[in-house]
Image (tube, rainbow, N blue to C red; front, top):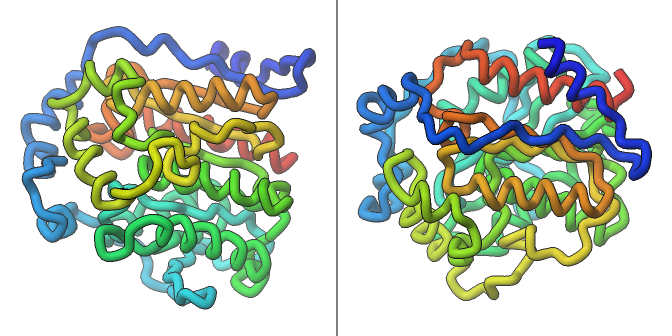
Length: 332
């Protein structure tokens, strides 16, 4: 624990940003708990291109309960983007975490994702706003990007109406959601409003177009057998952005040439994740652009820390890293 706290507190004065060096993440040892999960509970949740989009969306994942009164829903912007607002404390003036969900751009915001938003709101003393962006193939790129960004702009202007503090906004995304969170930050910079975002949290993000997977060794080493697989990523990208240039930064934010002046970033990756290398490379590129970066790789784990119990030490560490980053950027 002392080592963790010391690492988090290192200030690199020469460049004026924080950087937490990623942990050694090439152990080659899969966590036994995850190995068991891949053979049991995760076996029934295959990320397979042989499944239709309808089958993917119909996969049943247990959803933990939480008080119904802690959540409200509404539609915002001219595109009627659905958002869900989680405020377990029912108080005002809280930081706002804008949450972009996973699902390969083809899965909507599903019931089992609601509990995680509620849990984070409670754990981080924040209001979490989940964005139910439009999905492919019915709504290919740029629909998800437009919804993600327009929702951010609306929330950053109207967050006070549901008790949020619009001077303390964080954008967070898992997997495909991490891609959208990174793109939102880049688009905010182009519009000169990136300072509205105090932190970007990218959890096992896809930062490149999946058709560029030959650039990353992790895509080849973990192409199959670890839940998320190479074929599924290519399949969902074909549904999401079939005609888009491989270098388009709104599909692969790592392809943006200038990453300077972006919000501070917490980038979390996992050893046995095909997306590991592109996530780590994006963290390094942000660092080289003098952006504050916290970067941690979870050895022995798979995509989004799946297969672990909810109270695992790894989940506690992920929460601790996020709380540390939040306290730093929000001066709490």
